[in-house]
Image (cartoon, rainbow, N blue to C red; front, top):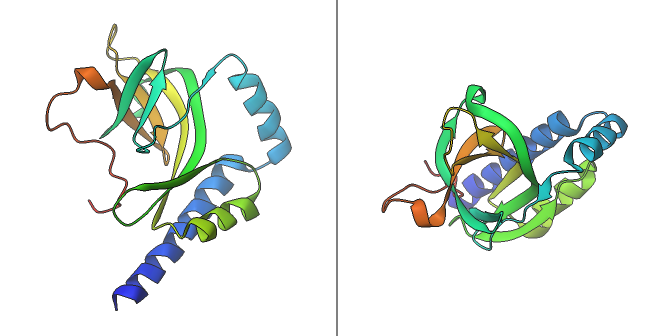
Length: 165
């Protein structure tokens, strides 16, 4: 029974990833041109080895499980633009740059045998908190808060990569 549930979950993950990528990347030529122009002056950021953090402007940030509305999303500051594959415990297996090739996304899911695949897109300022060190990271279409690691309070909930809420 557990194996059947895992197979169903893996299938649903693949369908969700297909939908997200198709939604984000429709019209490849137009998107390529738009992406190149909008990101040319932005810093490219890599996910940390835990798949829940990144470094931006020499500061280490953790991605939090809390989200904000688009009303609080300010200017785009940087970008990640990667898919991240996680096992059932939420451990990062591997990342891959997001491309416009749906076949490569499907292969990525199959190769990694991931229980969960998450898309990480752009990093934004928070408009409602002037002077704040917090940022917003677009994760699977939601604006997750990110905070400098040294400013986190004990017990702050980080991004859930297990899918078990």
